[in-house]
Image (cartoon, rainbow, N blue to C red):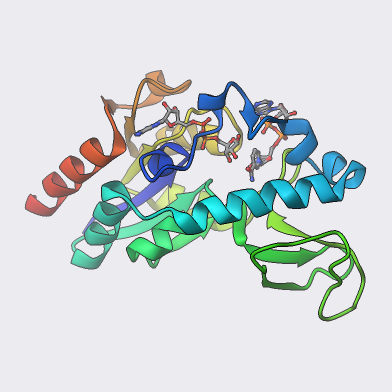
Length: 230
Ligand code: NAD
Ligand code: APR
């Protein structure tokens, strides 16, 4: 039984109709990243940031898991290998495909967070600045999303899993944003085999033992079929 850590990025959801970040020249729905994905942007204009994530929440709800998400869930369910999926994505397509062992290192659109007391609860479809925290009633609610400049979630668990892995697979990520972009170097440092499955070479493709390029809905199911035949 191999221990496999799988990192996914926006590319694994691209064929579900959720645009990747860099496909839109560094803009999301015509917004600059500094205005909608940083704590400073939220402090400046919380209504704009809530509107932006309300749009992404609606887009994610309308999307369906694709063959790549389903193949990863199939690999986990087969039980022949011990899988951990670490996703940078904030959509819920891995869960809806059936993946169980999953970490959302950038948080999720499904979560709301109180910046005053730290309480978390399921986000409504539409969030707004006047929403107050159900526990402390403070109007400091925000999407439970990790923004630029903030620390991702559960990093100690992720780094421990990387050190203990037999194989690290990176799927649909450009290797632009740290610390996720550094996982391949962490894996190699620990003598872990590394594989990139991406539409095109990522920023870090030279660090991978093997790289297969093509749409995730093709290269991921093909790789899972191989893993299940061995
Ligand atoms: P970083 O490498 O993510 O970004 C450095 C700075 O460059 C950012 O502050 C931003 O101003 C800019 N930048 C980064 N990527 C960009 C991009 N794709 N397009 C345009 N500008 C970009 O370092 P950081 O600022 O320290 O952010 C680190 C943390 O933010 C990471 O831990 C990451 O997990 C988190 N993050 C979350 C999301 C999300 O969508 N939830 C997105 C990006 C980063
Ligand atoms: N199949 C496989 N890979 C794809 C596909 C596809 N159909 N479509 C695009 N890709 C690849 C692109 O080639 C690119 O390398 O997915 C990657 C998407 O890269 P980004 O848009 O940078 O998304 P990601 O790597 O997840 O971004 C990392 O930065 O901007 C933030 O919120 C974003 O948390 C994310 C982080």
